[in-house]
Image (cartoon, rainbow, N blue to C red; front, side, top):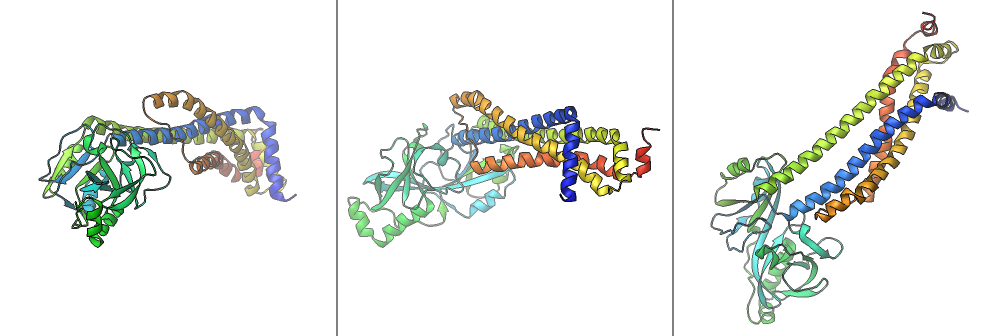
Length: 411
């Protein structure tokens, strides 16, 4: 056997000789890692569910042209139908405002859908935080340029094809009923799909007019224009401060949503930050506990370490033995903590998770990739914390002369 394996074997034998001490350290690591892993996964799941729920409640602020008439509703999900528009590049200046987290542009265009007048709303799926959260039934994958999302009060089934100004678009999904008229009675497409429809009207205006009973769709739609920008604020941001900053932008009007919903969403984000800070303090406490315990272990075994040094063991080898003990105990405890955390999650999902589901807050499990990364991180973190706790006592004893270590008990 190589010297490295001999050192690992000696470390394993030392763990077996002091079983009670190793068991108590392993239990402490198991509890901390299990609770931390369960907090991470449970917080991830609840945050995803609550974020979806709060997204359904609409934007915090809506920026529209100054001449636009907006009916105040409890949920700012979309803009009212209007002919006034804003420049699309205004989104960059809105994102630069302190306190603004997300900016979702929308464009409302009156068109003919299956020969009937309707409002078609273009949105950006990459920036959207209101439309996708209301989709109840949809096809797999992202929304393509030849697809449309149907409002909750409009007819149409998944997979059916609609004629939008003569251009066929397939139904990608349906929205749930929100109670907001302009949102429930509109069709939603991506900006790319809107550009394709306008291009179709320009290239074949006669065909589009014939297909829609002689009522031509607007082929002169100006590109790079939007009807409104939906804003979502950062945690801790003040609505009044953001409105004051936006007041300096010319030719716009700022519509405020329900302040109670805004405060609740921001409080949720701050709560999750507090959970993360609490978990970090747990891990710091575990590192301090490991340091204290291994300080006592090293102090107790000074004569044994001195004899090893006198027999020719190098200081580096002594450190390897001590750190090996820490890695074995905390690594196995981290694996046990992972099992304990999974058990806590199952109990949580069948109790509080079920209760949150009744309240309309879905419990979304993280993806398998996130779970695997979290598991590996939990085991690795427990091992690293154990090594960090044992490093200082091992470093201190390696610098002590062998005769001083052997004479410790005599003194």
